[in-house]
Length: 358
Image (spheres, rainbow, N blue to C red):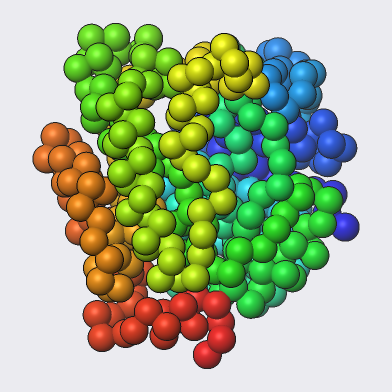
């Protein structure tokens, strides 16, 4: 039974995970680099993290607050990595030397970070029975509203996870029973393709670019960016994704379009009112573009190319994002090729590799 959990990440998800799991009775350590010294000091000064919104309310003091990765990781039974995708390689290198036999690593949101961590772990050498897994989507939509104060937009319910390789997923869930209500995905590609972030964020952020430029930090996508045009863009990408999912024998779980429509009609859906307070993006370099385009969107387009599925709208918004930000989100992103799978490999062979069936 897991008792000691380490959360890597001094941002909003790290705060939310730390407070929520501390409230559930776990001994939680929160750790990040000196870059997050201000945020971690504020937890101490405020005698804990104030958790607000849809995941409960209370002030929760973690068992340990540190910049020392050795101290944070060597006693952890579960390490939860709550950092942007751009920091995955950095964190993988930081925690690898201190992982203990029988421990687990969970990346959230996953964003195909397991491929990055797996590569580093192989290079560094870690105990063979450490299980690496990633979560479909994030723990919850959340923002740091004030120092040591995090607002959560939705209840923390069942969270889907997949290990890499996938044949270790059930063992991960059993090993970490009680931490969250985990449910198994078939493989890490399932979680990436079914993540709603790349469907919801990229096109809508680009459509709101002039408003974002004018409002800056005051812009709230779920308030100022919800237009009929945004909904049409989301629906077009959603329909493309449905065709791609069918090639894997998968179906969408929820409609991203319906979610946006209900956010627009928020007065009749008060359960979503908190979303109107979740600020951002404040520029086109926000993670809604930088992270989502280079991770799950890049992989969706890579899989679509392999399987002969046309995704012209998603391709267009990612291409536009590349142009306006001067980045190569697909070329340098988390594609099948960049994950180490050759062009000659069939998708069936790739799936066998990531599930551990060969």
